[in-house]
Image (cartoon, rainbow, N blue to C red; front, side, top):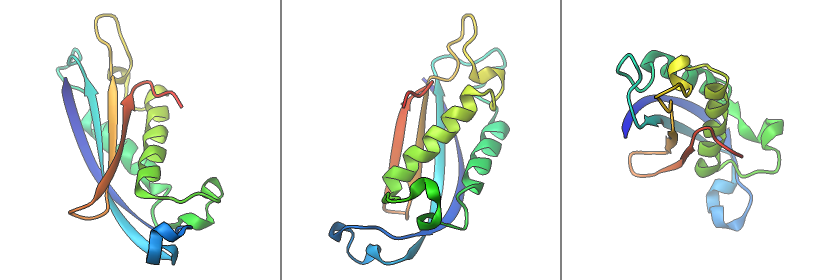
Length: 142
């Protein structure tokens, strides 16, 4: 299987609920480095997995909605622990929806003789020693 990876980052503030989180129950910040990996079995007619420029743009746009936000104040996360694992799925789902809507161009859509993009992984790096991912088949099913 062929793969392309693009990378960006975003910064947030948040807190967690539950004794398991110890001091992270208090407000704290995080800067995540995000890897978006897109895979397909066969290259498209242009010899690529996906346009790297478009993939970079879509990732940047989706991260912009989270960048410099206090996640505790965002209605869609009310009552949720916005863990690294949780956020990797949020970003996965948002990008999968963009792919389904055609944001990565025709090479992201199945065509006769080409299955299009088949798999995606979103990895959030908390530091150089800790990260979490969510991965799944495309189109994603919730």
